[in-house]
Image 1 (tube, rainbow, N blue to C red):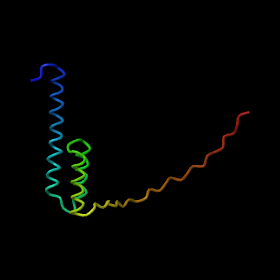
Image 2 (spheres, rainbow, N blue to C red):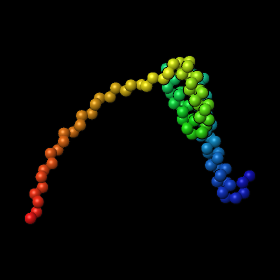
Image 3 (cartoon, rainbow, N blue to C red):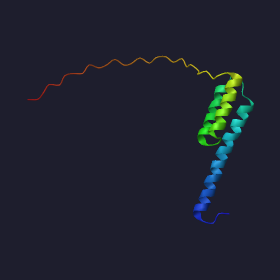
Image 4 (tube, rainbow, N blue to C red):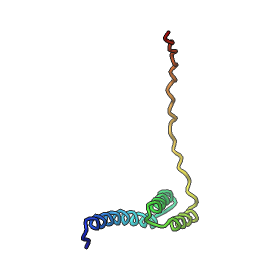
Length: 100
């Protein structure tokens, strides 16, 4: 058991981080087991996030993404149809008269 105050804090922080990493790891493993053609993009996103946060090594993430792309095809970017926002009309600047 930790004795010093800093060791106690370090233990608390490491337990918190472990819980967060375990949650991400479990979610990733479930997603990898249930992946299909419709959920490839979401699964690849989870793999990227896991590699970014250090849950898994970046090379392993790359390998998994490559295998998913080979099996289900390359992920296609979802095109979002959004209405173009009209720009507000420009206001004409009024000329300031110079003080004499």
